Length: 260
Image 1 (spheres, rainbow, N blue to C red):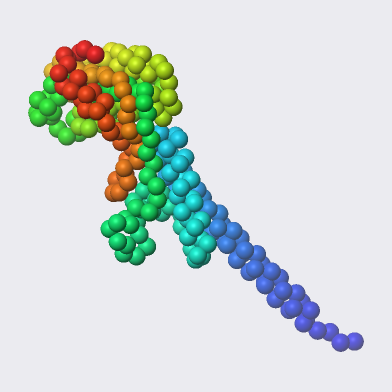
Image 2: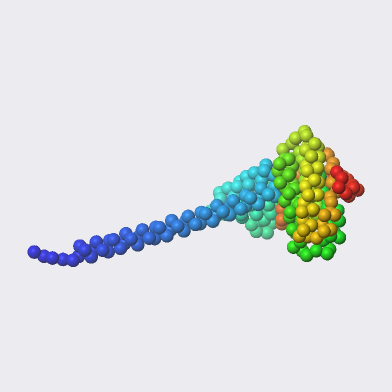
């Protein structure tokens, strides 16, 4: 009878190979999972940023156009482009090589005419003098607190915040979804913001100084048509153009403090 340890050796080697293969597969799955989670997190952050900068319908058009642009590129060459690069390429419309200046923007701009809107410019009265004797952090505490409160009111009222320019808050009603009661909605929004501001500056007196309670706002409203769209390039953003915008700004600058 012949005794040999080869079967046990082969079994041990086979078990080791299976174990090593399993570990490699496990590590690969973990790597792929982390990679997918990272890509998903990037896509979610990108979508959140776009949603905060653009109206929902404009956001959808931006992402759709970016996807179509990527699909066209994929037909000619195999490449991997993540969501961040897709959005950046569309907004900035960056050329692959060096294009002629007349062909700087090859895709159609996202721009629409909204014939019935109401704009609001709200400027903080006394802010320049107040901020000149404050620390930068205190200035930002005030602006962040006030503007965050205005943003919450805008969501509740169905008003779209366009931008903030210094201490001026710009909002519009009647776009991206047209509505016939845009003037009434904006007047109520401005009224809510005015009341909220008075409460906030009184509360902030404790941390920002007693003269903080003297701050107030001047509101200017005007109704009319506007051209709205995404002005592409570096730091692309949603903007409004037209005589309605200019008139609203003049109404605000010639208004009275604490008044709409």
